[in-house]
Image 1: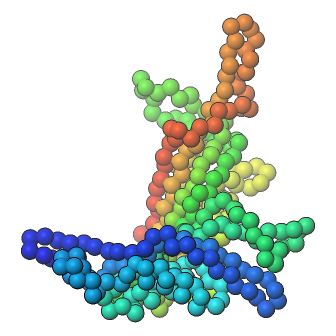
Image 2: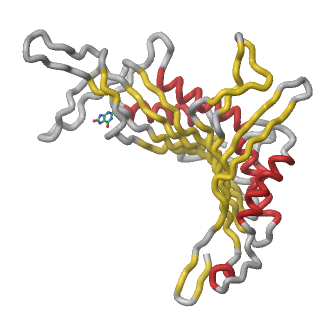
Image 3: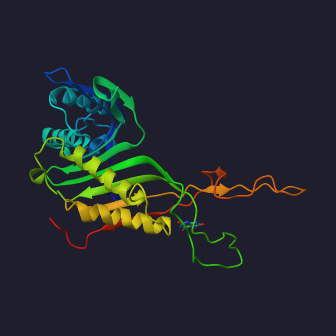
Length: 307
Ligand SMILES: O=c1[nH]c(=O)c2[nH]c(=O)[nH]c2[nH]1
């Protein structure tokens, strides 16, 4: 932020959607692979570029793009999207005197190792669905804010869901039910409690493992045990249970946000002029819709950090 005469300027500049893929080859022939789309945004002292056309303090966004490839090359061991974002943010804040903070976002493409005849393939991958996301904000002083997440996690259960006891008024048509489908596309993001570069865990792939574990906790809570499942009285209640399970299980997560649209499957009834009816709904034939849909979101955080 800079004060000009009677004006205030807040600015940042960066490069979006820098796509990079990296292969790491083990000595025994196994390959590891990641594909990332990287967004970089730098907060830097480059006021003259805005007010007098003097670019001498500008880190070119083209340089930012090239840095992604150079750092990907330098990372000779497989690393998480979080750690790659940290590598980049650390570089920008330490290498350039002008840069006071770097914000790096990464979306990882869900390439999953394929299995052929039950055996993990050495170098074959197929595209999955949900995506691993991360955002890191690093300041010159070494303070950090690290957020990770999931987007596009589409999940559905065909029973053990209902919605009853809600406000009824002159506009309420929705019948109460204790038997319905429940479908959503989860967007989750959670903040880690590490607040400086020096407090980050050193274990390789720590954040990749955490991502997998958080996803598992979210899914286990949504679905319940394989045979009996778990009853959901509302998307709200299930969302809360999911968020609570994550904070309960992972002491290094201080905050989680969940967005869970309620994707409706409407009962189909086809009346007939003559009896009997053509289709009488019996929890079997549905009309899937995504418009309009309910939007339910919440954040859950600790009042005091467990760390
Ligand atoms: O789980 C639900 N929560 C709602 O807030 C809501 N509103 C609605 O029409 N159906 C549902 N279902």
